[in-house]
Length: 553
Image 1 (cartoon, rainbow, N blue to C red):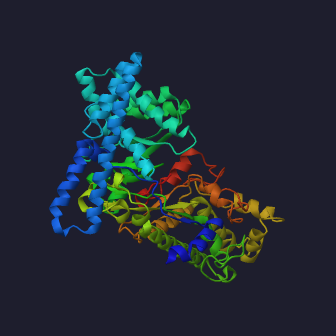
Image 2: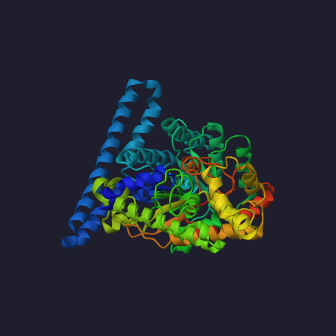
Image 3: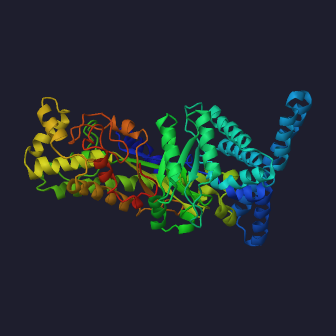
């Protein structure tokens, strides 16, 4: 099959700076509310009830799934009981810690078997399941909508006098510090979400929001990562509090414009009430809480490479390998539209191949990586008796990340203006300069770098090209389905891929040297936003972010 036959070819695409198409099980979140509602005993009872209702109609796969869910949850409850016994023994052995150890024991006896009744129990439940799901093989990349999910436990504790505000804050700090101890700031931090809205559109921000921000400030660690969802109605106090934390160096934040984030999900067919309860998975990629298996980083593709291949008839100039399709000698192009058509053809070809390869990976997922521990927390998986890798979730997405938008746009505009319109240089002269990394052609490079309008400076006319590129990329991505029956979803950000991909891209017509970094996210190339912040905002906000349901930064 393609997985075996083409793995070498796709490895070569990564080495050539084109991108990757793999299976991503590391961007996923369990259904926290589904777990908390009745504890693991509740999920086991639900699995038994559904299994019994199927009777003889249950397939062997469904029978195996429900048996696995019951097995792993029963084992988790037994494990927690062992922790409780150890805590009780510690209470006897270390009298000074007796009260604390008994509190641990009582919590471990109640959760995760039963539903949490206190903030302490909810935090203990979440920590244990986080650890076990990661042992199963998935990275838990969101710990849930913190101020929405955990607020009822906090409010009940305060009302009952079980906790003071300071004691609750101390619990949150201890909880979060365990994540920092786990990563020590060297690995991907855990994402906790604040603000935004509930399924009915009610704004979430509450007392726990601000208490958690205090805890984050006092903890003073780079992990966890806090995502804050802002609405037009969000109170000014939250904006100012987050801005003040960032100003003073507490800056592990993701700030999210909630309106396009929700609208982007709805545009792909997600009902509004589900779209409103998305979680940023991993860094910033939205997925519906408890209903979606997002796999948000399956495909990463270098947009700037599409221009490079179009200018070289599908050949990678740094290696001489034919990696794209033959779209014609660009020296024979008579206008910009022919070049743009060649660019689009190259990108469509690469996207198609990456999706095919990703699907080949996904088809192996259920066999090589069964995941009953997390699948049982996803409502539709439990209802259907299907694992996450089998497409059991209600929404089964794959993320496709486009990197280097500014290089893409600036390079295409440079060729349009300098070659086709102003005829400052011939195509042959430009191609020769690119092959030589502008050696002996510094005047040409400076012209392309400084005399052709760059993305991010508020130029309405030239920014139209950026929108054309982004919209075309998004539309093409959304034509694909993955092997689990879900949508491939577009995104525009870079993480660290602007460096990792850029080091295998030759010189580009925007004046960039070979192997230099690409532009970060949807922003301009480094140093090219010369019109100021207002002009930059004017440019970036022209992009239609409802076309990037997998996120844009």
